Length: 122
Image 1 (cartoon, rainbow, N blue to C red):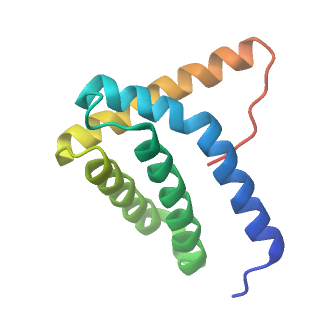
Image 2: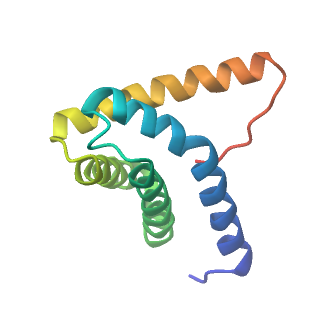
């Protein structure tokens, strides 16, 4: 398996777009559920960046086996990142993740209805 320059550029673009689009949503959900003392904007940026890099590594390592194993690994990674950076428990991290996904889907649907397409960043 080889990492090409295109893969790295794609990852860099996904990280930048993730920082711009996903970080503010995650930050707002975190502030709402754990408070502004624990949920810093820089923490939400770190969660997104580390999560996307780990996702790229896991998908590269488990290229042929990505399926359920990769999904479980990434779910645990995302929840751990939220738990660690927002200083909360596993259940609160799961709640933050669920609310984040719901709000993000609503935003995507609204932007789609307004005719503003968002390309896939995940």
